[in-house]
Length: 296
Image 1: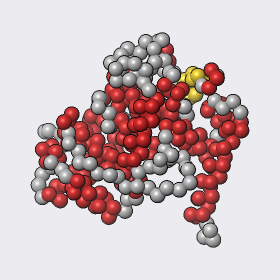
Image 2: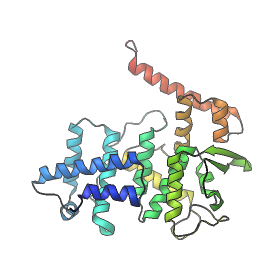
Image 3: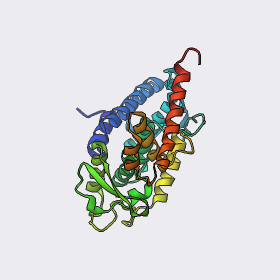
Image 4: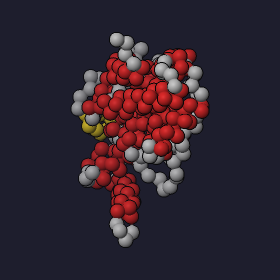
């Protein structure tokens, strides 16, 4: 029996792209919802050929149906990003994906992005890559920023000698200061997946992350990719590569990390630099209070 289009995408995400279980589950669920909606909306079976003929109006109708389900702007933007990835997979290199601007999120005070938003950002960039190994590279870079708190320059400065990976990673930060950061299994798996797919062997004295032609990867390229993805996902224009490191620190502090430990993980020379995250966490607590207290 021939697998359905969403099932084929599941296999591609799991086996070829080596996405996390969470990402695969979320993206495939979106594909299944889209196919079910289009079957009813168009009154016919959904095929690769019919998906190639989709217009903006079809995607708008689908997102409108999801709005009826009660999803907000962030969820709608993630849904649209997953739909784009699915349509590109089905259509192949020559896929024509209708251009549709994602919903905007109301801007407020600068805030760290949520874990779901960080993964959606990385996933959107990786899925939009023109080659699988480039998508794996961008996924690994962004997971390093959010999952290990690296600066973008620190990630670009990693050399092939970090392989094979252990449970920690030695990072060279500002002023040549080195530190050890723990590697989450998901981050380690992302780096290994990229290294396995990269067309260039990871030489010990060469940059780990390579550009499309084999030279060192440019931080500016990652910044431009993040800029494009945040527009598609409706995230704040303050969502930058450094915001992922900012989110890493804020989320750790919010879950009980002490300032001294956080200082070591971030590679701050002074504790004063780390204390700014207490202000962000206090702002989050105030938001929770205002939302929950009956007299707020």
